[in-house]
Amino acid sequence: MADMTQKRHGTRGVLAGRLALPLLLMLVGVVALRAQELPTAPGAPVAVVPAASQNESEAETIARCLRDLRSSDVEARRRAAMIIGKYRVPAAQEAVLACLRDPDAVVRRSALVSLTEEDRMISPAARQEVFRLLSDPDVHIRRIASSMLGEISVGLGRVVVIPGRPGPLRPGVPAPPAMAADAENREALLAARALNEALGDDDASVRRNVLSAARFYPGVLDRARLERFFSDPSVEIRVLALQAYASLAGPEDERVDALLPLLEDADPRVREELARTAARLGAAGTAILKTLSRDGVLGVRIEAVRLYAAQQDPAALPLLIALIRDEAVPVDERAQLLRVLNVYPAAAGPVYDELADNGPAALRATAIRMLGTGRITGTKERSLAFFIDCLDDDSDAVVQAAGAVLQQRQDELSAAALRQLLLKRNPEARKLALRCTARLTPEEAGELLLDACLDDSVPVRQQALQLLVARQIPDWRDILMVSLEDSNAAIQQTAAEGLMRAVREPAVRTALTSYLERCTEPYLKQRLEQLLAARLPPVPGAIGGERVQPPVRIQPLPARPPVRRRVVPRR
Image (cartoon, rainbow, N blue to C red; front, side):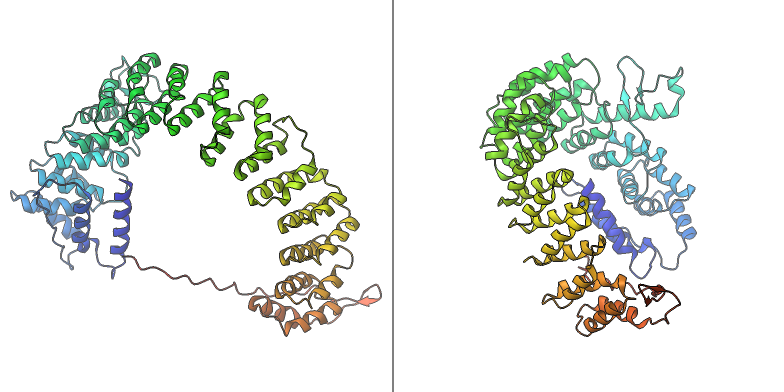
């Protein structure tokens, strides 16, 4: 249904842009698309709706359609039913509801298709008609109506059938004294009855559509009807039935008994879904999870152990650790299992220690992060030196994990430790050292930043220049003016951007004026030209024996032109 909705929306977007013609002129394309989307019986005719007159007003079109709907000609009523549903005026909407009850199936089908083409919430009255059409004699109408169940659930709210009550209720709402007189509950009761009757439809597509939409109506479907689908030949139907079954209310022990035969289901997809269903039954489903945790298929076993261990049952811990250590289990699956291991903090430490030293890169990274937080106590003492050494690892994931730990614990890093980071071969480790200089004194930070200005890596040198300016390290202007002569254009640009804040100083202005002649970045060049062109006379006053100028008022620059992207034409 999601795919059908996307196609409809895309078609409407294309049609709306054609010379602003009325929507009615495009009905032929819309109906053709709907005919392709909806299942039809072999040999079933597909009617094409003629376009309305280009000169006809909306009121005239509606009046003509209302007149045609009173006709005895089925084809005239069919055309009118397809058109009238496009209008929101009360008379048109009432006419659509009447069309949904037309004695001719073709008219009913056209009106239903007309409803599906509109990008708006279906009214409560029309929603009731869709539920009623789930039992229509025409199979094509039942297919269309059942495919709309997700859409019409919007605005209906959650409906739950409470055993022993005369009808469904919204969760947490006590039964009113006169439920039958309550319009909302009457609609909910209609929905529950219609959905359960549709579960027994002769058409497999209708049954599948109802089961697929069960998540929008939790607890509504009848337990006995769902249990019959556990032996359906279709794997998809058995899986959908299990998903709907998990949301039912009632005694959990009784529902577990009905699930036991599925332990022998031949398809592992069904057994995986069985594990998820059993987990939602709480303690009653634990026996099923225990059995599936020994399943011969690895995927089923992983899912069962994951859900079983999440219940914090001590008996599940050895099974969980065995899967985490099993090299036959995909790394991403083992990473997911590690998250479950965190519910056993006392037992997680040794496993994380083992993985941090010898595990695959992705698992090592996870273990390093967890050990670095201090929430998991390992068997080894992990000092900051361990995480610093991890920055030399060949795996980017491990380097990032160690860097994240060090940045979180930067208050523990001394100037000597940061200088050690500056010697690492990985540029990211050296950039990390620069980011962690915030807690150092200006003198300590200045020494590190000056060394970093000579780094082989351009990004490291750029970051060092930016931090020199941000922290106002002594002599930062001189360092940046020297960097204007660097052989790398990116370093020159970074230095020029930093010097802009001191543009009123004569030496800086002279250096920037010289750099302007070789600046190759258009936006930076334009900004420099504007700054250097703003010459204001000095004002009385002196700082250090020199006259200073007031702050230069800079006119806003035009925004950078947007990057042009090639637009692929819609097909």
